[in-house]
Length: 190
Image 1 (cartoon, one colour):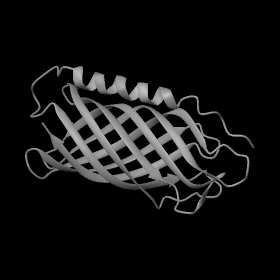
Image 2 (cartoon, rainbow, N blue to C red; image 1 turned 135 degrees about the horizontal axis):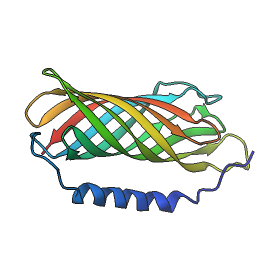
Image 3 (spheres, rainbow, N blue to C red; image 1 turned 180 degrees about the vertical axis):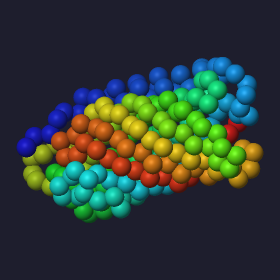
């Protein structure tokens, strides 16, 4: 079983640069929120239910994020993360696999006196990399995909919040297509 070529790797860098430029140049539309920009850092867990072997959700990872307000209760968000899919464990045709991703999504926020919540949906670029389980296999696969997530944000101070996030990712890999992740982290608003 031969894996797909990795011709999308150079395009990942271009996508990241375009998204970063869009975040920096985007101008907020209204002034009804206390902040325009947010940076976040998360620790998390996740995995895929459709990988054989390796169908567990006990894998650990991280995620970094940046967002900009575009309209009232609406944000454009960039997320970059990595999920280790086993330390010495098998994941499909790979051993010691890692999933790396970059997503851009629209966030639609809801305000509550105790916490804020939001749903987000967007597109992403995904890279699955690892050591081959069988000789002669390609060890990397890169593709585009989609993300859907839910998050809750609890204020600690005016600028710092604790964020809890659940997300589902779809990427057209040979070994797995659906990934689930949960993250807990902090957000800084400015």
